[in-house]
Image 1 (cartoon, rainbow, N blue to C red):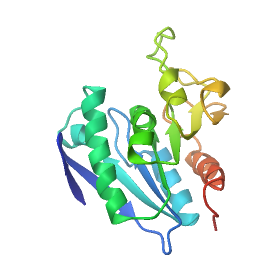
Image 2 (image 1 turned 45 degrees about the vertical axis):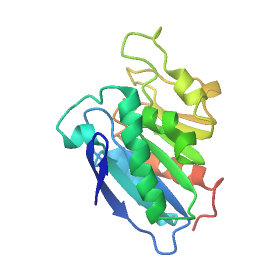
Image 3 (image 1 turned 90 degrees about the horizontal axis):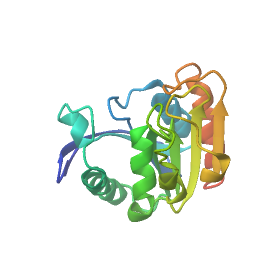
Image 4 (image 1 turned 120 degrees about the vertical axis):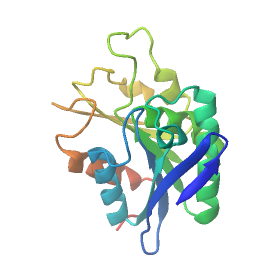
Length: 199
C-alpha cells in the first residue's frame, strides 16, 4: 500500500497473521531496503508468532535518496505512516523497529506513536571511528522497552547493556547481521513473549 506523508509517499508491505496478536512495523537503514535479510527473518518469526508485520519504505528512499535528511522531518513522516497503520489495525499492541537508521527512528518516535516496545537491529551507536559522537541517548530516551541486536564486529559500535532493556551481541556478525538472520528473528520472537502470548 502507499501512504501519503508530508515528505512524499511511503510504501508499506503488509503480511497479515490470522487472528493477529500484535502489530510489528519495521523499516530499513539509510541506504537499504525492507528486503534486508535480518528484516525478512524478523518478519517471518513474528508472523509465525501470530503478529501482523508491516515493512515500511520511508519517503526519502521512495524518492531515491540514500540519506534521510533532517531527523525531525523523518520522524514527522514516520508518525504519519504509523497513524495510518494504527487506524487500519486498531487494538493491537504496537512494536516498531528497524535496522540501523530505522532503529533510530523507531526509538525517537516510540512514545509519540504509542508503541509498547522497540526492536533495534544493528543500532548505529556512533559513526564509524567516532565513538565520541554517541547516539546512546536515543536508546535510553525511547521511553519503552527496547531490544537491541548488534554484531560484535559492527563498525558503528555496540550499545552498552545499560542503554536498553536487552542488548544481544552476536559473535562474528557485522552491521548487516546477515550471517545468521534466522537467529536474529528467533531472538526477536522470544523477546515478544513479554508483550503478548505467542504461538
